Length: 254
Image 1 (tube, one colour):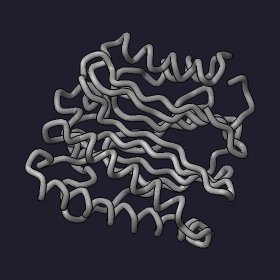
Image 2: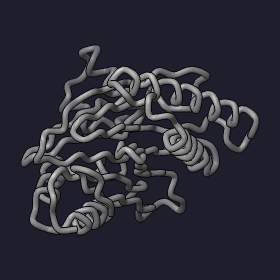
Image 3: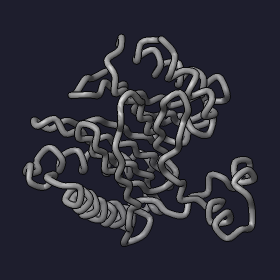
């Protein structure tokens, strides 16, 4: 649990009910001037190598964030440039590591990296981890980089058909699987009162938007809301690791 400027937050990560290892990595870092970096990475590939990819990604981004000069975050464009540069650099590091270590062949990770500065947010998105804004209703900010969304874009299936498609979890972009990568960037204002939820698909694949809104907008303490989201995802199967950061723009019981 933390509280930085306008945001309180809770961080949760759970192995789930079916997996033996947690390949997700999640973190919230804070610089002295109050800027937050929120990270969610869902590793995949190789023999238990997904945790290597996600750990490398989160550890490296965290270190660079804390060591960087403040000027690197002075504007929206500079924040995008900082994220783009380090995502590309880490992508190459993960890709090269996998090539040199046969047990890690094919490993990669999704990534959402969000720089939160008061109500301003710059986000880099790769894969099918998701970001939602919640204010009585739930709005999905990111769009999965997935096979089914390619089909939707080509007019081959509908948005509704995509939700239940057998290949829903096939992603077409992941950090570390190719020598080069471009993340998708979002910039938006977090106008209070609201919640920002950034999660791996172990949560979003199990819980509906209505379930999320019911729990997050309840009168429970923030930490309890986090626990209840994990509990429900596990109750509904828990086939995957469950990880997220839930940020609240309002002061509430923790």
